[in-house]
Image (tube, rainbow over all chains, first blue to last red; front, side, top):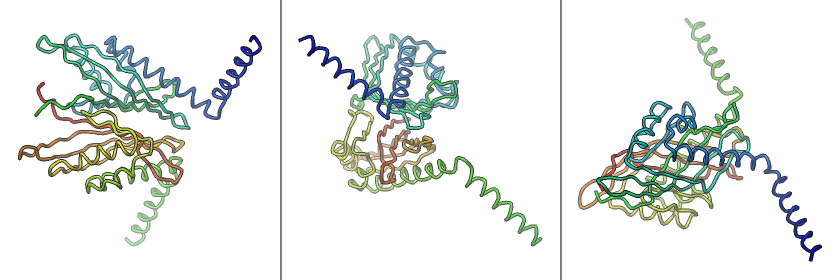
Length: 159
Length: 159
């Protein structure tokens, strides 16, 4: 039994080793740092921390929000985020479900799902949907948002 | 005058040479092929050519349309496209306004604007908005869609 357990641990180590030291090893570490950036951004955004949220965006980045024109640059994006954070009782969370980094490591993308709600005329308005974010690996080693776009899964309101 | 003209042609050749043989040459050619893919996709989509439109999508690709769940794989995406093409008098066009390719050439993205309209209850319903498409450079040299997402610039309908 003890031997068998050791063998299982040994086998698990081999499998872990294969995963860790596969040719994609360097890229896996990039993917991990990219996922950390996405999750870090989600955390400061959920906490409605405006400067920190804008700080995740590249100076030339754009946010493509539904029902609004494209916002490019930190000033325009900061205005968009501030308006969002000012919605009554707004709550938002998102999580990446996929992430990939180019072999060269300069560009990556994440995609995932969001949930949000706010209060309008005393009623809770819920929403959930999906997003795609394109990230640039900056000279300082950080990932910054080049393009962020999202939309709702809910049926359109009748026109 | 003749000499002057020759000199101008010569100077133009030097400038063209600098652009063509700059270090970013390979990437520029990738960007050109990526833009050609985006424009080619827009053309078959505008013509409502279903197999050709689905053919631009990677086998594991996803389309993230507003007011709908994420569609992954060619069967689900074909169904989504067919429903769109079946809208009464539907017309759509898009054009990329930016495109970039990773230094390694394996991943690229385009972003741009779309215009569409269809008929509902005898009235033309217009829309315009923006999109982001992530492309994979396939083994055969073609670009295929990994992720495509878009949303409207128009204000939301009142809930």
